[in-house]
Image 1 (tube, one colour):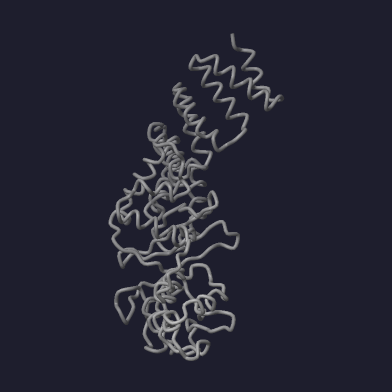
Image 2 (cartoon, one colour; image 1 turned 180 degrees about the vertical axis):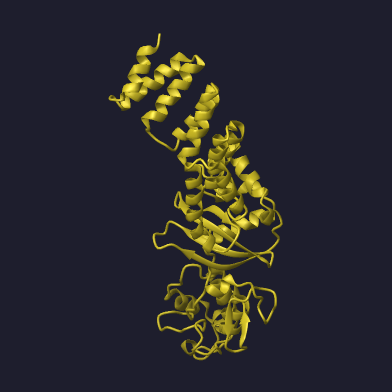
Length: 392
């Protein structure tokens, strides 16, 4: 894994990034070249990346840093395997058996359980077995992340929201999310990527996919499960380590803002904005800083950006609505409060504020309905009763 953080090129193809030392060549090579070597089963057992055979598996197991590497190895190995004589088939090759007795080969393959991500469809095609697999859409983090970058390469910015955690149906939020991604220099210039590594946290709540973009730049996508599917949560301009650094950075920014040191806060934010180009946290801190220097118009933009980049984070909605309420722009304030109410279910203070906006707009009927409904669900909520008593 540490080898992936270096940027030396493969000393065999000089194309991909070198990630490991090959004992057969005594050179630093990338995983694609490694797969071409180890597929022939001639690598020494002393190498960690040499495939290992087990009695209960049809194909060797191999160490891989990503699903892309594993699939590529399998495909390379299959090219050798289908033409090799096999003791199970009286020294016929699997390809010969598929032509002479396909049902026998299918029965043999069916006796094994293949690991997740195994390119079984590719193997069946090589063997010319006419079996259609219902593989469905790939929902592993790596496939979702690659699909995300594929959409960027083809300039399908409008499709990104559906692959991210920010799939709020509000069109203005979707537009801003797409605009933000389209403004990131590394992504605007993207023409090629290679997966370097992928990992999932022990609690299964986070995953990272580490890429090299355009044969040069480290880039990492952070994903989280949402609605039973992996979704992109954040882009990082760097390797996975920058993900673990950000909490300390945000803590320093919050500390500076808490002390009223707006200059220090601004400097800290500006230093890391290119590393965390779609960070809702940074947009939030920009917004808080803007409030501190009394620039409410700028604060509204940044809180809006924070919502677009994390549409499930409650705080930016509240702060944006509060600004509009302070400006007596009650329809706009109510818009953001109602949008928040779709994810912050059954919060009395939020519903009460929606009623307040209706009343301030002169819509007494809707204000009364809102507060009456609130009292029905929360009979002890005193503010709603007091607001109702004030109505004519």
